[in-house]
Image (cartoon, rainbow, N blue to C red):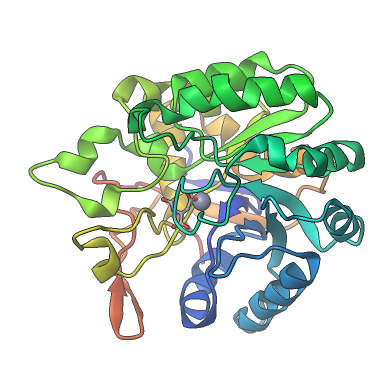
Length: 346
Ligand code: NCD
Ligand code: ZN
């Protein structure tokens, strides 16, 4: 049995860093393990323009711990008012890596998102032409659709028609959670569709939300699904298929905001994301594909170089991580409820 594993430095292809003191508190956990991260734009107010993205990027760079060379990869929040010329210019100038589609009301801070995809087709068409990736939160928001079916319904109602209309558009299906999502991505063979998958959706199913009572720290969107879906995700990532890569969707909300009458969606996993994923790959006897998932497939899809730096994993238990304190309040770290046998060597 191997006891150490050295891999190219990983990247996080879907991350919420927030702003201000929350940014300062959570960023060091990402920079400790990851070289780059695609930073989500769902601030209040959202990151809507190239100029918003440039200033947010600078705030992240200013918040980096001394001596780290972490690179934030910025995204714009697509609205029905987005100016296609601004998107194309921001991408051409290297300010943004992609544009995020939030169906209005789908998740945290998505109120300014897209109500009707028809109203953004001109922007999506300009993105397809200029090669700007679209990152999708793939859930319909119709309250008549069961929350556990919203991803599968999105594929049928939005994604398939969109890809038929704009086959050149590069699409990243963010935080995939279902067997239907995996099947959809596997069916896209033109190299233009990929998906991020989170550590928590690889480790928990929907039972975790209700084990012995209601468990707000396992509530995120898209919501965790049945065990058969979790298995489909594990099979997809551990198969070595290059269309799947790690997006932690680490989404910090202070504990009181989650432990409330109407608790926020989001799981904070930046401190143990790599240890969790290593556990999943080891349990599946697929450690040879770990580097692909966390370090290689993502940059390859985005046309970026794989990191020349490395990280080393050692077979040493990662103990449960204590809460991170922000403004004197606790921010709980994802608890996978199993022991983690690998640690990242500091
Ligand atoms: C995210 C957040 O808190 O910003 N929450 C979540 O449950 N994943 C938003 C998102 O990615 O949907
Ligand atoms: Zn997210």
